[in-house]
Length: 223
Image (cartoon, rainbow, N blue to C red; front, side, top):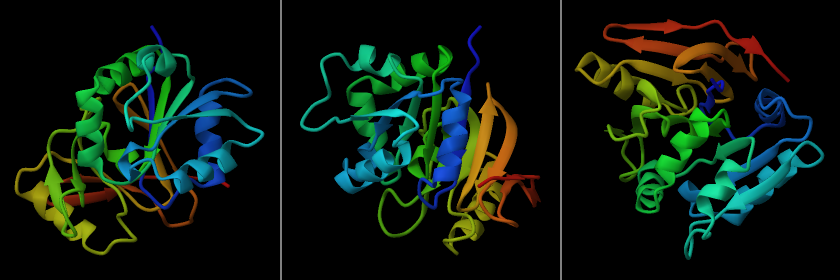
């Protein structure tokens, strides 16, 4: 059976050190990386950043859904070693994906052993539920994620001051327990189990958030 892996990053951009860690999980010297920038309306600036991160390390292909996705969407997706999802509006991104069946293709990719990753929107989309600013400037909970991973997730835990109290309160009130990640922190899941936390900064980590309790998890410093 193929090894199923997801690296969910809490935000703070696509740093070279974290991206290098994700590239290495593919087991290839020069992995084929599919970059999906749907959440940022396929902002070319974010695509250029990913090209910079991949230079000399990977072969990068941007996937665009506008004005429409490629005819060979499934074949194109499954021809890669890693799928990296950028940040932005998670709800809009999921709506576009579902219209075109990309959600089902992503599950097939994950089950076949293609590594999935991403930051911010690209972190929370893999979970059942999340905290998001997809619906306006105020934060809200969302309960229709892809559900590859159980429970909920919250990015930007230490760099957006309203995230922590809203997530803690939501979980206390019955929202699914889950994981909160500081900026520059990656959560490496094998199957649906958290295997390791990696961080770019001393003191930055991931937290397991359950009703009435928030538990910091040990993290390996990279970069």
